[in-house]
Structures are given as C-alpha cells and as structure tokens.
Image (cartoon, rainbow, N blue to C red):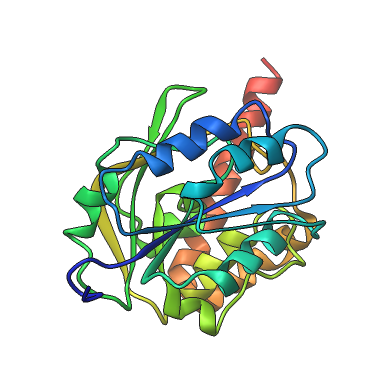
Length: 244
C-alpha cells in the first residue's frame, strides 16, 4: 500500500482515570470509515477501570502503555515517539470525532505531507462551534484546538511539547512552529471537544510570562499588538460587568 494513496493517520488518546468517558472516545476512533489508522493510547497509570476498558478493545489498539508520567504533555510526547503515521491527531479521553467518516473526508484534502491541517471543533458542553481559519492575528489571541489538528509527523522529529508549560504547551507549540510549517484550513468539523477538560479553566503562569514574546518573535509585531489590545479589552469588559 502506497503511503500517498492511503496515508496512515496516527490517532492518540491520552488518558488518566477516565473510566466514565474513555469508551466513547475509543468507539469514535475504531468506528471510523477510514481504515488506515494507527491507534495509540497513552495512560498515566490509572487506578480506576480505565485499563479494563482499554483491554476490552486491545485488538483494535495498535499500541498502548500505562505508566506514571509528568502530565498530559509528557504523555503526548511519548505518543509522538511511538507514532509512525503520516499525520498525528490527539483525541484524548472525553473527546470524540464529529462524524464516522470525518477522517475519510479530510484525508482527500490532505495532499501536502509537510503541512499542518486543521478544522473546526464543536464544544459540546456550551453547544458552540470553535471555528474558522486562523490567521496569525487570530492565533495571537487564541489557540487552535488540538482535537481539530492533523500534525505532520515530521514536525515532531525536531520539536516536542515543552513540559515547562503544564496547561498551554500545545498553544506555545503551535505559535513556535508557525513560521516553519504551513497551516492549511479544512472546512470540516473534526471533533466534539470536552470543554470541561484539564486546560479549559486552568492558569499556566510560566506560559503567561512568555507568550507575548513568543508571539512577537514568531507571528510578528502587529500580531503581538493585536493580542495586547484584545486582552486589554477583555479585561475592561470584565471590570465593567463586575461593577454593575
């Protein structure tokens, strides 16, 4: 089978004590109509029934490991070292693909094996679509959801997630590779995102200290100013609402 005809997609699920949501995620992966999938599960040493669920589907899982880690991005780094696909997408416990044929639909549009492809994500808890093309200005004020990104595996041979940033290492990663990797928008809704997950309402102080400079270096001065203005307006709006 020629890679160019049926590219291999590595789908990664990172999990820890996720017995209530893991099976739905697994089913959304193994029931995809596109068959050339490498499925990897990285577990952080769960103590609930998570591993029992993994074992129930182990004939459909290409690789799985369970061991203590240093957090979600350490687990994601482990997956990038194992993955052998042309593209890699993270569909962590609690997240699901939007449609059974979404990989089949996307792969037809993914012709540049060095490019990063991304699409929309539906945030199910608030019933809102996180959507649209990300210019460098839009990326400066908010991240692309990793559930909607197909990373070219080649990018991980040079770059891993920086474990200094416990919550937003993926945002730092995306900004850092923006100049060296082409970002191509897929006009498709890729996944349903568990909006109540780890990073949704968490702070990351080391990240907050460096993101401005990182945007300035990688996205440029005007993107940096865009971020400054955007978040200044958000803070003003919050103060007004708080004082009403």
